[in-house]
Image (cartoon, rainbow, N blue to C red; front, side, top):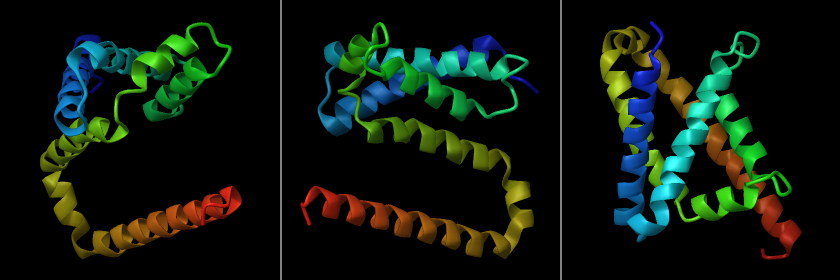
Length: 151
């Protein structure tokens, strides 16, 4: 079942509010400085949802279109890019993960029967994915630190 635009807008506004609260509580943000940035992130996400729903573009996931739109809108030289970057730079990335992880937990709770069917098989997959992510991130960090002459 596809979500309606009313559902999507409600979710994005709720997420923007939670991101704002997380940024204020966890990272010393302020409502005056960060409100427009949080709402701007929600608007960019809505634009990505819109792109993902277009008939020719709906083969790729929403997260792809949101990411592409965010990158394009923040490229130097694109009209409005400086303003977008200025308004969103104070939103700490980790503040955005708080509502996302909460939604993931709720989604998992709805799919508990499917999760039970996976049983023990999910454990080695999770361990492999976590190990691979950690090792790759560590290697990339080491390479960049050496290239920069920091380490």
